[in-house]
Image 1 (tube, rainbow, N blue to C red):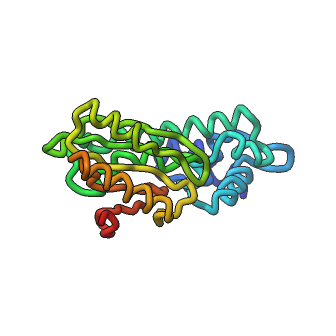
Image 2 (image 1 turned 135 degrees about the horizontal axis):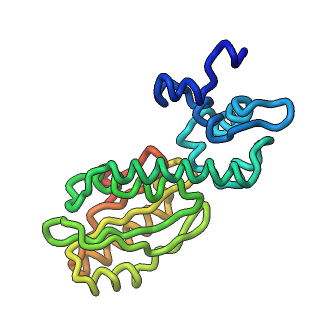
Length: 223
């Protein structure tokens, strides 16, 4: 491509607006320049190829993931990570503040920005008042790629201390597959049984997996 005849991405952005650029051109602006024999646009295409041409998946990469591409060193990897984090924070701020839980989607939207890109599992509990207004959001544990510990004593200890009326369990699957594992189902049953005994019901268990989620309540798995 003759960059003299066709406007460079940065020039076109200034003249036509940032929305006129495709994903590779936006990334090329962040990258700045390529190594010997490659343009920033070439490097951007390599990045997109690494993520399967999916910006959502690209945003999950750690700095070392970006740096695995020829032409992206530590400094540029940091710029890319910072840009992705700015995008995440903007999306989170743009979501309406939810103070009351009505549907499973309310819970998903509250946690998706926090959990969807994590390379490890985290287990959270959303404590509710009697009106289902949010009382507290508590991280119970943080673990590995395929699991984390959710100790019932810690969960109900915190809930009782704050005099919660009910709770919703939330954790993520870094694999991107929201299907509950057998251990997820077993843990949920144990926590539901304990909650019923203590008159502190578990209303739902939400598994966040990128842009997907599963609700135990919606799927009839809280029996």
